[in-house]
Structures are given as structure tokens and as C-alpha cells.
Image 1 (tube, rainbow, N blue to C red):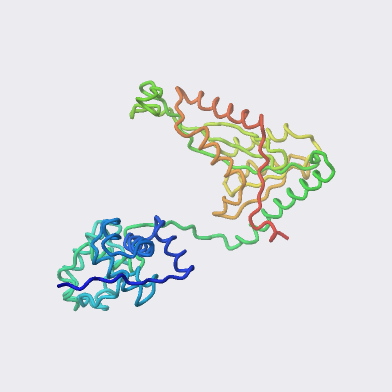
Image 2: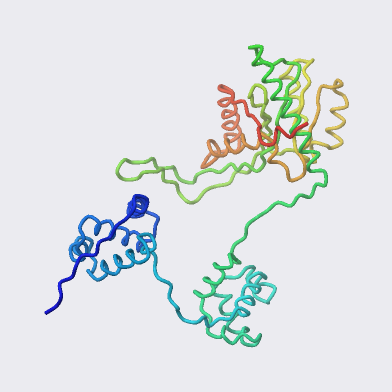
Length: 382
């Protein structure tokens, strides 16, 4: 006659119990750990292998093994799989290193038309050329093993991550100049706030840039509106008509938030000078107008310098961002907002309509101006 199974007494401390409850309720823990935590908690309430197995839908021997491991090694240690010897690796360390070094080269360097590797192409190349390089273990290499090796080495030869090289040797100095202007803006704002008045009109600080290539795209068929319960979004025909492009020349007053803008077909020196004339007319004659702008050729051309030479001394002052430092210009954030809120998905019937709608957007923004503020590394400005 089979001996009667006695229940195993399993004691757990408050800390272990709280941890088991947390794991059993987790949505991110591995399923095996969650299941074993549930087994131990259920067994603590009802010390019966059969009852716990029936309640959780597992075999009673699974419950028994989990409880015995918890008794021997502790409740938390019982949640993890025991280490197994496993199969000896067939791919040597030298072969892995050769494969990874191969992945760190471009596929085109080895005669392929591909710019970068695909894991399938890399596996095929390793099978063909690996044995000749002394790695016979790669003769039957498959794509899945390549993916596993590359993941372990954190190498992704099929992807490209872009970076921006600093080509301006005076990058830090020019950045400091821009930050000093932003610091001046901050001081003017704080002074005006302390005096409970608007900033003085002695100076106007403008963050300026151009946004070229805004496309005037027309529909070839009307958009279809959403229909509740049928179509959740607007429907648009795939075909469209191009009516050319326009350029937006815009500057934000960093003290008032007002946007000054022009929309023209191009953005040459003459258009830039036209924008400067717009600023000249917008501010009193005694106001010093300071512009933060990039190194576009129109900003430093002979035509622009000749026009500035005819202006009163101190009327215009330029502070240039370093090359590849357009992110230092606050107006870029405004352009991003404009793109997301106005220009995305825009359709017009003509280039003139596009110009009118962009200028209407400028008027809309100026109805409730947003004063843009720079804070990044501002404390480093001398």
C-alpha cells in the first residue's frame, strides 16, 4: 500500500512574502517566475499539492518540486530555473570574433551591391568564406545564430544612427556668444518683472531663420470627412499636384513673443534685406535690434553688408550661431510647432493660397504671443 503523503511545512518571512506577492502580480516578470510565485502563495494558504495544482491548472508534481526547492534554497531562489549543463557551443570564440569583425565592415567593401549587411546576407557570406578563414564551424551557420551573436555583442550592422560632426573650430566660443544674448534676455525680463512693467524698448532681440522648400500641394480629388462608426479619419486621394515651393523668413522677439514674418518664393539677400526693413519699420528708431541667426550666405553677402552700412550705428547687431549649431537658435522650436500644427497635411489650390495661409498662421500666433525662453547651459554664459 502506498504511503500517505504528508504536507510539507513551508515558512516564509514577511519580506519574502511581500516579494512573492509583488512578483505574482507583475506584468513584466517572466511567466515561469510568476507561476512559481503563485504556487508558493497558494500552498501557503492551502498546503496540499493536489489542491494547489487543481486551482492553478498545473500538475501536482510541479507544485511539489517547487515547494521542495523553496524549502531547500529559499522561496525566492525557487522561482528561477536551475543551471543546466547544456550543449557545448559549436561556434568557437575565434569564429565569433571573426563574424563580429565582419559585421563591423560595410557589405559594399566586400563586393556586394548592398550598402549595409542584412543578417541573411551576413550568414551566407560566413558560410561561404568562414571555413577558408579557418572557421569550419561556420559552414552551417544560420541566420538565427547570427542574430543571437550580434545581439550578445550589441552590434546592429543593418542600422544607421546619424551624428553631427563639429566642423567649427570656434564652436564653444560662438555658442558662448549666443548664450550671452539669451542671458541678456533673461536679465531684461527679470528686471521688468521686478519693476512690474513691460521690458524697455531700448533693445529688441530677435531669433531669426528661414524655412525654405515649403511645398504648395494641391489635391486632385476632394477630401472625404470622417463618418462616425464608418470612417474615423479624413480620407485623401493618393494623387496630388505640386504647385512649387515657398520660403518662410521669420523671427521671434524673445522679449514679447511677437513673430515677424515674410513669405517669398526664394530667400536670397534681397529677401533678407526686405525682412530687415520689416524689422526696421516695426521698432522705434532708438531701438537696438539684435538678431541671432545662422551663417547663411545671404546674411553676410556684399548686398546685405552694403545695406547695413547705410543704417544708423548700433541699429542692427548680428550674433551668429556656430556651424552645425542651428539647435542653438530658439526660432527652430517655433518652426517645429508651425510644422506640426499648420503645415502638416496642408493642401492648397495655389502657391498664393499657401502664402496667405502661412501669414494667417503668423497673425494667429501673434494674437496670443508665446515668449520663448532658453535655459540649457545658460548658467555657463559669462
